[in-house]
Length: 93
Image 1 (cartoon, rainbow, N blue to C red):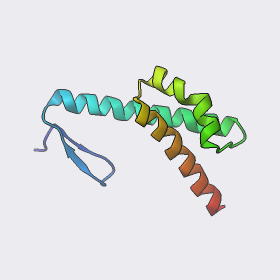
Image 2: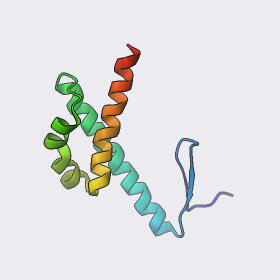
Image 3: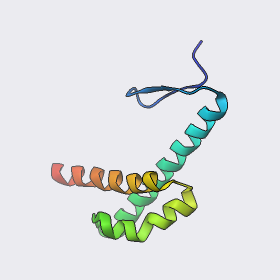
């Protein structure tokens, strides 16, 4: 029926990978990014909603690299994206 190596992300894009190994690797990276983002969110929640990219980067960057196995750009992205989401919520309150 569907292509086993195609990955959908909440209807926004469809990525076709060449083989099952690449698809599995992508899914694992995506899951680690999600877990890292949740870790950043938990830190923000537990630290009085501090939203300084620099301060949070100093505190969490190495953890994201070490514990979640993220490459540099993904670790930084998890921090910046999570902070941006909190800032968006703040403007709506």
